[in-house]
Length: 608
Image (cartoon, rainbow, N blue to C red; front, top):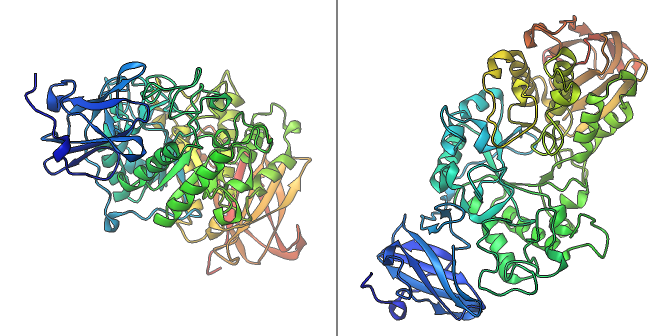
């Protein structure tokens, strides 16, 4: 038993919530409006009840300072309530022993302003969605960690990636999960390496020019191992207590655990959590999971009976502050309703996100690629997918052909959707590559999902590691993705238009499934880019397509080139000289041949 006595009356008062280590000890503060008394128990007092009693403050918070407590020690709050004695983890703990155990005291240093990384702008961004637990699993281990992910950062840099989007890393139940079941929203997943592991990954990423975006889950918490549930013993009916709606608004597709966006303390809890990732870890942005279930109860925004105005206001509040305090931070909505109000500014009534995942790109692209018969490929839908934009800005959308959602939940990786029995067969290989070419050349922020670059097949599972042996087997696919990223980033100074706002789909041949479009930023040599996609099983020769200027147009990339796989046909696609004469609304034209299920990217040398 501890011989320590309470020091509540002598305690220095430290601002903030949760456990706050300072010189000489640790301050603790917790919100528990329905508790009759609260104390903190932990390694520092041999887990002895009542030794470190807390004092009720205004706003129903409880506070104490524990002299001699230190970083690394475990603790819980012990609450005397009308429902009995409850022992709860700290709702704001930055680390947990595990999701069903005790909280840990950890340091909470903010990243100094001079040390902050400046992420790429949206027009420069190339995103790689990563699940830490399955991305790179060391031999003999059951899951990956932040450290093992950091080992692959040079690989991602070489691939042309300049941002990684981490699937949720808040503490979840068990060691294997997608992460969309946050048990302790402030704690960093212990199985991945906890707070220090995350800091290490972000620091290493920044050192080689890669931004880090954190996926956050505010549409629901839990539902399992959820210490917030009836935290201080109070609830209404079957509700979850002070952190949750206690009526019909609690219901989500993942359980009845929607936070109460109308309660000030809960709004602040979520706001502070968003700021934590940016302030304390130096993350470069946040991707909000399924915002449609923050702004509506059952995913029917616009229906007055379903709207959650409190959730909309919460998103506005947080986004406004994020962009004021971290002007380069990237905030991404996964709403999948393609409403431009998500990415309009708060001052105009929008939610204020920088950009959003674009359903009207991914679904038509996957549909076009997975159709069995060429005659059934919908070129009009492809046209719409290429030209969609929000709030007049091409980069207010994130475009992709694979994401964790699209390759699970009844769906599979694109090669497996194209040819379920033979996902490495030539048509699957070709059409998957063609989809990638459209991702990297259409206006928007391109994103790929881990393993896509070496033709990972089947579907995403958190307990099945990426098969890195495929990198050697499909080295040509990897080379294609690397070259696509180089074109997209204008690495050679001749494809600047792929980072521009403008597109015109000016060439459509329905009879042989050929689509051509022009991309540009300012226009001119080294800027204008022409992309031709052949969505047919047969090569397309003598494609005559309009171009804006005379001179030679160089083939920068052809997805059917033999360098991208010995299986490919290597159909000739060569540089060509423009001839005068109006065509496709342009003053000149060129003739090009494009291989089966292939795309070609052409532009002009600046000195041409």
